[in-house]
Length: 115
Length: 114
Image (tube, rainbow over all chains, first blue to last red; front, top):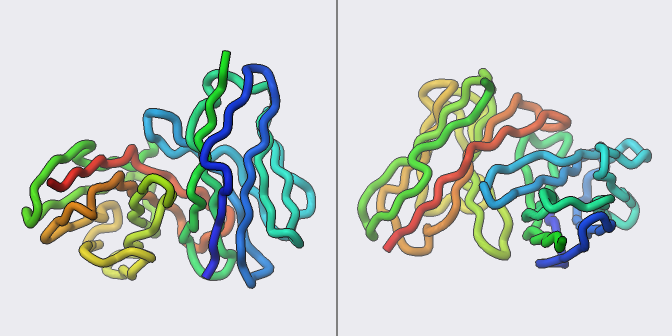
């Protein structure tokens, strides 16, 4: 079974600075997808960014980018030019490419943005 | 507007009193799923459904039931709730086949069992 681990329960960053959230996963599969979700105080789950395992190029969405290291099974999220609205719980998630639509989530990292 | 809706959003109940949390989606998605979110544990899958009348257990199915009689609806049933089922519950839907397909989440239901 796949597992996803986020070792940082809490992180903080100054507004306009850069922060990196860590995520590691364990799988025996070679083809899969990785996601970062944001959960603001409203509790809504918002997809931030996604990465296909067979693509070496790291995904980027505006101020959000990932560092995908397939051999190390690492998938970190970098937030550049942090804004107050980035404050939220962030979840890393894994989905197999062959075994359906199920998402396996990490424990979450609570990000605080200080003005 | 494409969305997943859940009702109720908040519920406080007592041990043993049967309850149902409804979930409905308007995107014609085949796949639907229920998750529970607990501090320090992230989201864990309870049950999922690949299509009408097709359901299966996720990681934490004990104490829950589901049904999928219509494509758009996927209710979560707690027949005899217990305090350890106090949690935040999310319904999600997507097209089947996993992969790139984004899962759309409902707004969540905060359940407290006294």
